[in-house]
Length: 149
Image (cartoon, rainbow, N blue to C red; front, side, top):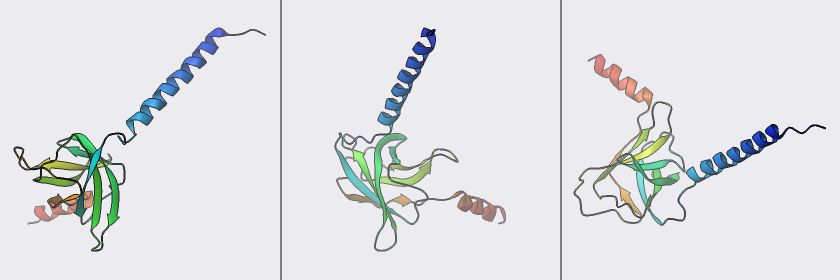
């Protein structure tokens, strides 16, 4: 029986590369549980596809993860999210639901209103300045309405 060493080496390399890619994938999608974080929340009329695990970005940089999406007693969509402890979010901030392109994932976008603010949000604070999700249909209907006036 003839042994082909090249096929054995290529098979071993394929398995090794697969294991490396799998570990990179798992590390990229693991929440930073080991890091301390604090919770913030915001209430929306509609969240438009935000789910647990979506990113929270401050000025386009990932600073946290959505940890819960639920209805409150007044039927508002309450989104609870973790912010990494090394990030201080200013009190004057706007939160909105954004998308990575037309078919991209949704994420929470935090935009500071006053970048020189010296007061920051603390654990379990609620962000009151929210912009609700607008679907593509909502945006198209606004454009059509403006065009007909």
